Length: 316
Image (tube, rainbow, N blue to C red; front, side, top):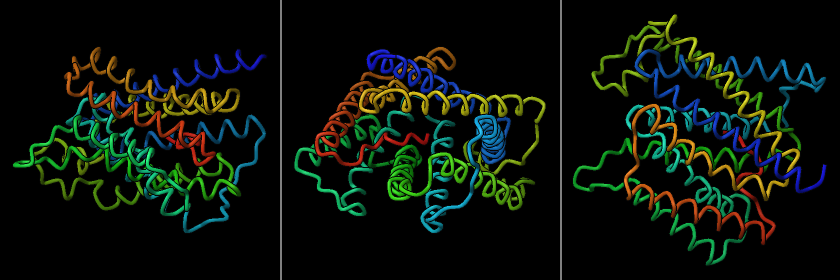
């Protein structure tokens, strides 16, 4: 297969992976009133974990939980878990397009963290792109400072946690392979979800009327015959999405396929319109365009400087 053919196949894989992620997000938005957040998180992760282990067994790859960086691994697992908790929470009151647009502020945070922890040099051009990118975030949020709803920052909090996780991944990937790190994420998410079940699974602290807080603290297994087929589907869809994404990066040039991760925003707009009749405002489109433009510019600056490329290890 020629390089051009490999890149074309990789682009197709990454587009399919992002489309599946948008469907997974839509399913969360669809059933959040019929399942608890961490019930959903547990089921989705458990299914994906089983499928990952089955894939590693089938492909005769070594399965290892051993890490050379135990402390950093724990921090990475916690950041990843709570980061996407913020993202799933945001889907209860925010459109798919807006949530994913704000999530793509993560490259700005990665660049900032790289200067602090990886001692990378960030020039005036990248700092300008970061600043412009956050202007895009501001435009999407459209804040009212007289009565600002801090819940709107949930996808941005997810982006920050994801950036911390990615920065740690850059440090640990020299000794821990990608499948070991994925197993850590899944195994850690299952354990933390079980802890939430112990303390909130009976709905003992669900004294809220707000649908979002009910989603977080609702009793588990209140409607399993309805919710769990969707939860199992999420786990399968997420696992196949990862499969397509990792295949894209393995057969094609990362510098080509990584830019197509932004297609997730397009898929989210389409999915949100078809399933929930959500149409982004002109303001949202403008903010999204600025965020994508700034992110792409940062990518090319990192490529030129041969520094950390934020999408080299896709973990979503």
